[in-house]
Image 1 (cartoon, rainbow, N blue to C red):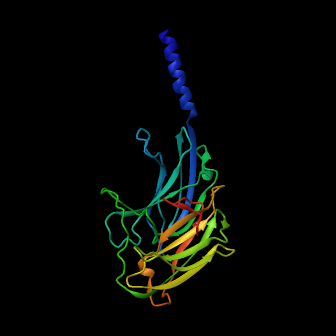
Image 2: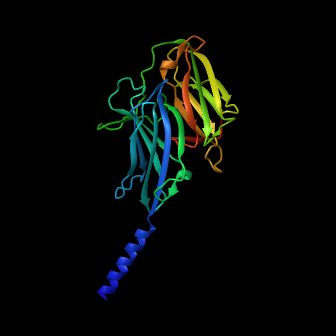
Image 3: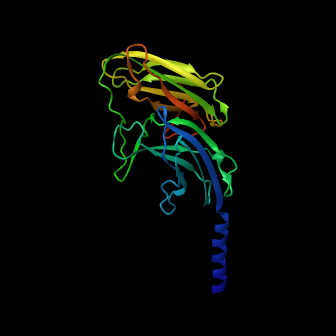
Length: 279
């Protein structure tokens, strides 16, 4: 009797073991800080297991960017269910000497997950300018608690102010054409947000947008991107939203410089991105 019970227990455990699937993922990209390559930046590939304490997140691999800011990273792990890979980027770009590191978190779409230890395809994130800030998800990473805070101290300026921004958007390997881009001055209280301009990407996925407004204080500009890349049949559109660093704000109606966000693959899943039907 005891022998039969032991055999049954062993069979159950062995069967559960066999249900674990080895899965892998690969990602590459290039990081910039303004016009300079972001070299020596720590990049980690993680399988996010959420708040499941018995099964902590798996570190699938890590690397540092090369002298030209580029990186390539792949890894594998075994899970009962599909893995949820994330890329974590730790950097000091546009940090104004704050303690600890800024942490970017980008989720990798499930279509880039392969069965087995060797990834069958590589996700190319593009060329990313680390100066920008993900709205609502800036994290300072160190032994201190995570801080949710505005990353910059606003310029002490007022009057007519202007801003210019440009970039390239892709959906996988194809240009993301016809994507709506909005440039917004965010206001608080009874003063409604100001639309500084809007444009759609061209046939090559490129855009350039500028605008100006008059405020008693420094303007707080953000860029909103509305798209359907990697969205399946979900209604409405995915909305990405970035804060634009205050160093790119100019006095007067004509911007003195342009903020280049880089080349972004819209397949990536950003922290707290939303779906927006009214834009």
